[in-house]
Length: 126
View 1: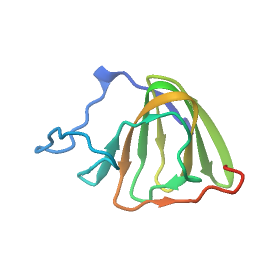
View 2: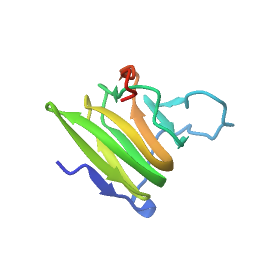
View 3: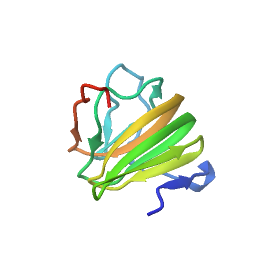
View 4: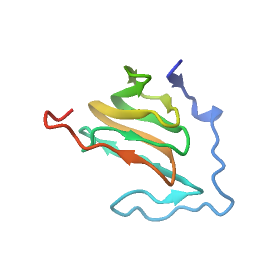
C-alpha cells in the first residue's frame, strides 16, 4: 500500500458544510464539523498517548511544515512513513497509528468521528 502522497493546494478542495464559518481559536480540541475533527496543531513533541485509532473512517494527515514520522500498525507489522512539508498520509479506517516528531512541525488533520480510541503511553515512553 502506498502511504505517502504529495499534495498541491490547487488540487485539493474540501466541501465540509454549506454553513461552514470561521470561529475564534480557543484552547482545547478543535470543533467537530459534519462528523469530522479538523485541526492544525503546531507540535514540538510527541502526543502524550501510545497511539490512536479511528473506526469511523480514514484520517488525512497533511504536513504543513517540519518533519515527522507516522508509525502505522497493520496486520501485526509496524510501518514507519517519513513525511515532509507538502506531503500527506491517509491513515486507513481502523489502523492504529502515532505521529513521531522529528523537528517542530505543523500538521493539518482531518479526523473522522465520533468514535476513536487512544492507548496510554508505555512506561518507557513509547
